[in-house]
Image 1 (cartoon, rainbow, N blue to C red):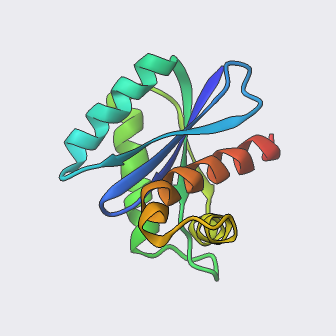
Image 2 (spheres, rainbow, N blue to C red):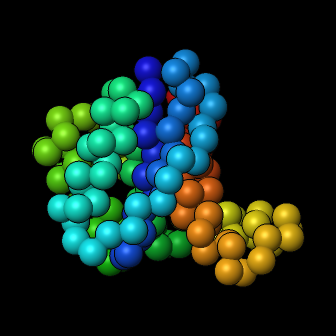
Length: 135
């Protein structure tokens, strides 16, 4: 069973997917979008290509556990994805995954310009790995 992990942002969505056995997570794409409909279409194509059976979306809660604008947007994305793609969706707490991804890239010596290209994808991998670890 393949699971898709999404790290939603205002302009980009990091995308990761598990291997066919659902054991490991690999980053596959960063979706840059102008509107939500175009992003949903790209997510749908990815789901079909990888035969995804479940989607996990990062929920960027505030440090005190409350919902801010990012969390509200993640919830709306989850509702739309589940409704339009007819795939089960689960929100998972993703506090600090983007920070962790950034630190990992910095410690790996990745230049700032190149970090922007892969940070969202790496954050999606971390979200998916956290979800797999919780199972």
